[in-house]
Image (cartoon, rainbow, N blue to C red; front, top):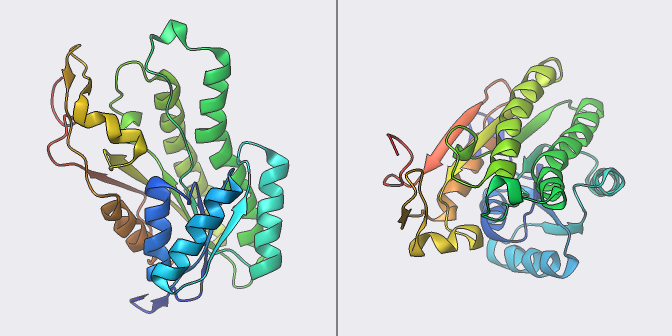
Length: 258
């Protein structure tokens, strides 16, 4: 796919959490657009199965590499393997993450808080750090980073303090990365997602807590709509950037009072 002279065919993309859910949809869309895609996650069997499926569907190269993005040594090994196999990295999609238990704030354990922070924030930082090192050193220099944020960063759900705090922090990481990457042609943007259909949102049809204390069913959207937005962001030349984009179900209770 070419957009105003920027040819993405054969360029290298890494999608964390790329073996399932929205991440798998992103990986499928990127591969269809011509990217060579690395999907990362903790479960090698899931990654291998997803990589095989996606390669067969798209006809592109999709490779799975097992890694724990909350562990600095594992992240270094992931990027070393990418550099060794491909020689460069053109796109990092920081997609991996998790939600927290829907319990009162004072009942959230330190262990769960730490787990959510590691998955949603520390992992994104560690991957961004390694991407910067590689993108600065490679020729031609530069690349793009897209962070999976959330509309929860600005409008949280009840009982979501760990998740909301990390997604709010992702917005800061996005802006800092965009600023620090400028001199090196590293562009960084963020996509905020509202109710893409996945395992995480499966319960929404049965009702989820609202700000007024009621339970209500919420609409969802096809995750491929998110994936198409990521392909657009990723296909821009490096002198242009989508800093933030919100893609959401039109009728979800987000805009307005609640």
